[in-house]
Figure 1: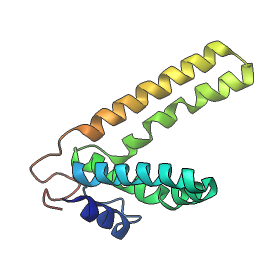
Figure 2 (figure 1 turned 180 degrees about the vertical axis):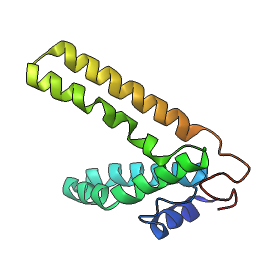
Figure 3 (figure 1 turned 120 degrees about the horizontal axis):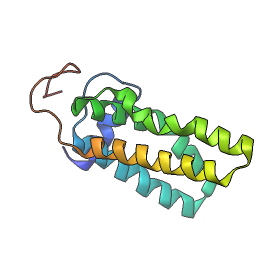
Length: 133
């Protein structure tokens, strides 16, 4: 899959959370979004914010499908949000200790999801679709 093909695939599957996405599709789209955000931030910051808002759903969708390709449920992509109660506790108690714990949990969960996003997809069909999809 080429860079352009990946971007096209992500926008064609704008809000498709079913199926699978190969590593190239996910990472090329992530690169596209990162570079576009940096360029737009330099040109006019509100435009970068609008771009990020416009690409939020396709970014979540391709990540979801990427986890499917690795044989995991897309719900695992929301794992870093599991630390939200710790953030709430840190704010409610005005506690630096809880804030550090919340930050550590968020980073740990994000690293776990990143590891899964980097894994090679299963070569065979899995419960989320065929290997060629």
